[in-house]
Image (cartoon, rainbow, N blue to C red):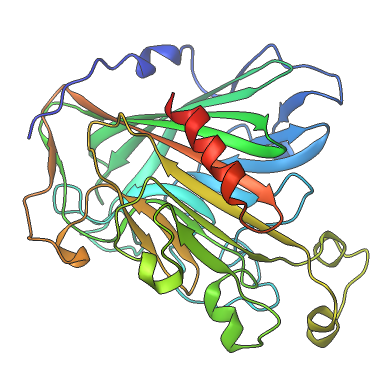
Length: 344
């Protein structure tokens, strides 16, 4: 299926990597900076506090780490970017906090990160940030390359950070742009817009101890394992999180002390825009902590296999998502209002 939209997002990036426009100095506004002098990475701050850092390369793909609630609680797993935190498992080392990629693209696997001939990587080429008092907009341009460094396609990613209803909102547009040849995003569950949630928040943490472990819920009211593979406009993953004082070292506690305490709670809601060209998004969301929106998969989700989504040469496909980072457990009225605001 050929999919044609104008590649306008690519025209927004000019003049090379690491541009900054209109960065404010006031602490009570959004601000950005480069961590440790890394010009390919961006720290995003609100009221002086870190919301997330975007890295041009998390071992084969760009992504965000850490990702925090408005109060500063870490929502995503630390491993393999750093040593595992309490209650984390060292599995699926290609799950790197918060990222976008896919498991079959012209027969290559961009989901895993092994050094093999059938595995590709995504290379950031340019980045730009615009800041005002109400928002940060991060735009990056990336190449999807095969094992030999040949580019199959490029993409332009635009992340707009704002605050709404007391939550952090990241409105995301990803434009996938074919070059001199057609590009097919294949029929696989291994994709696409993904998060690996914190070890205490995953549903399966309840198997370690009933005092931890979160809940998955979608727009239809399905919960936990029942949400896997189902189409839905949005899905929320919420649960207990490690205290900021434990993570930053100001008050380190043993596992038993953490379990005996009243752990703070937060979560992530991911939304799929109703006007996307691909009308249905299914969710590769697992009780072990993977949380991914996948508009390409069918066969693994119980539907007839198909050839995938083809983007003809020099054409593009644009996908829009909203991500909401919140403190506290899932709140249905607020989530519905976020979706209403987004879908207008």
